[in-house]
Structure formats: C-alpha cells, structure tokens
Length: 420
Image 1 (cartoon, rainbow, N blue to C red):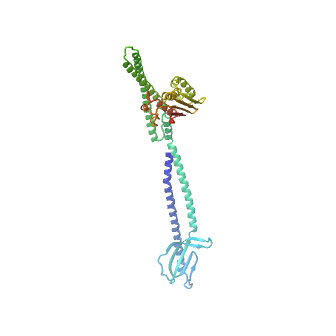
Image 2: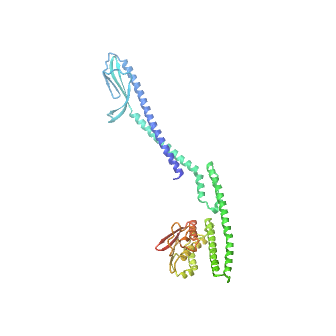
Image 3: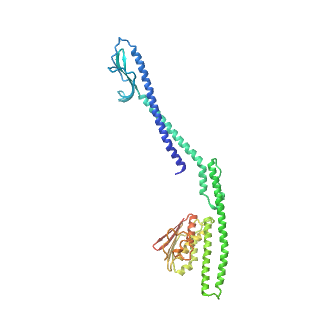
C-alpha cells in the first residue's frame, strides 16, 4: 500500500469517530436545550394560569377543564410545593398517531379546593426542527470531512512529489551512468537531506565501480602476460628430446592447468564486464545466423563424437543482445551440449523469434537446481575440465538483458531454454 493512501486511511479512521462523536454530542445537546426551553414555556404558562385562577371570582365555581394541552381536575391529593416535569406520548386524532409531549403537573389549591393542574406542550414541531437541523449538520459535517480528506490528499501528494521523483531516479540508476544522475534540491528540508545523502552515496558507488573496473581490467591484463609466457616456455620444454616420459607428463599437466587458469581469468573478466554493463545493445544480432555459424565451427567435434543434431530454426530471430554476448550465449550452450554428450548422442535445437532451446543426451546426472547457474559448483558432479563459469556467464547475460534462462532434466535430456 502506498504511503499516501495509508496516511489518508489512517486520517479517515481517526476523523470518522471524531466527527461521529461530535455529531452525537451536538444532537443530544440540542435535544436537551429544546426540552429545557419547553419546560420554561410550561412553567411560564403555569404561572399565568395560577395568576388567572387566583384572581377568579369566588362566585364562579371551578369544576374542571379537560383539553390535550391543559387540564384542571379536582383531586383529593395534598398540595404539591413543586411541579413535576416529564415526557409523555398522546394520541393525535388528526395525525392518527402517537405524538410526543412535554408535561408539567402539580396539585394546587384554588379557594381552598385542591386541583390537579396539567399543562402540555407538543414536541412534534420541535422534533421536526431538530431532525432538519441534524440533517443539515450531517451534510455539513460530511462535506467538511470530504473537503478535509481531499485537501489532505492533494497537499500530501504535492508534498511527497519530490520523494517520488527521487525514487524514480533511483530505479533508473545504472553503474556506468551514475555520475550523470543528480538529485536536485527541493523546498522541503527533509527531502533535501535525503537527496544530499543520495548524491553522496551515488558518488561513492560510482567511484568504487570505477576503481573496481580498473582493478579488474588491469589485473586480468597483467595476469595474461605471465600466463602466456609460462605457457610458451612449457611448450618449448615439451620439444626437448632429453626429457623423460614422467617429466613430459608433468609438463603436460602443468600446461593444461595454465590453460585452464587462462580461461578462468578470461571468464572472470568477462563476468565483470557484463556485471558492469560494458556491452550496450546497439543492434539486434540475428540468433539464426549466430547459431548456424557455431554449428559450422563445431562441425568437426560433432562428427568426431558421431552426434545427431536435429534443428528447428526460425528464418530470422533478432534478439536484444550485444553481438559479442550473443556469440558467447550460443557458443557456451552449444559447446556444453557437445562436450558433455556421449558418443552417438543426440542434440536437439529449436529457435523462434522469442525462445532458444537446446537439449542434449548425457551420461551425467541432473544438475541440482541450486547449483546449475552457480560459479565453481559443477566440477564435483563429473564435469571435468570445467571451471564452472560457462553457465554462470549465460545466466549473467540473461539477467543483464532481461532474458529468462531456465534448466530442466526430462527423459534423460538436459534442456536449457532462453526466452526474451
């Protein structure tokens, strides 16, 4: 969930109970005020009636009054010093429904006789007024809540915009182009601190990348020269007729190890260059032509092992790869299929515009899923004369150029698939 959405949801979760509590409090406060005002009106009406009845002539006997809003009934109950207030509901014939009233009752004495005085005030109009006020308040609160939420969302989105710009720049960072990426200053102090830290971090990373790149290239270059000299010296020694068979064997083994070390050095340098993205895609090589070329180059090895090669190739297959890496991808996968095959084995190759699949028979077991693309992890499985970097290079090419490389073992076949 995005930070802006999360803060908005938290804001709503906090504000809704606050607004609901406020509306509930105002409703009860308003309702209590209406009852208080009604009670004051009833008390005032009672006072007026008492004055009127107190000044009524003794010659005018009072028997009883009975209306819905005023009753004066003779009673034997004792006189009450204070009136009583309560809410009642009475039947309204015109409305054909029960209606709420506020009632004041008190036993009074008029010319020595006791009467039950009851005054009532209808709350129907006041209830309707309260409902209308509450409706208006809810609309006002709802509109205010929506306005606050939208305002908060728009303000937060504007405030957080520099952060998302910096995030996009981070996503687009590339080691070989890091020096051109700068994080600009913003009106917000905290984001300025973040961008300043990001600028310092990218500068350090880029400098480390340059240093590592130079170290790798220099080390690989410097190693190649003594390796080549040592190899040439061993070849000269092999031509010496005075050497014993055991000495020749030892020199031959040393020569093989030097060749292996040279290939290892070359492959490690290649991996470093791929990781450093030193092979930009300037064109899309046709994988069909590359595959045909390497089938021709490996023709002697294929004939020597009497391998059967079945092909199903698309006429053209331009792939988003550097031409040198397209050669390495095909040569490594095809070379492994030939090297680890048994005599009179089978190689099946299928090429489409988006996928390349190569399957081969072999006496070697299935490569464990966790080891198949790991460096230096296959020699203990019977893969002799291998430094374990060939498939690691293939995988690194795939990862760097968004090509999915997969492996499976099915019906005695080792199957490698590349798809873009």
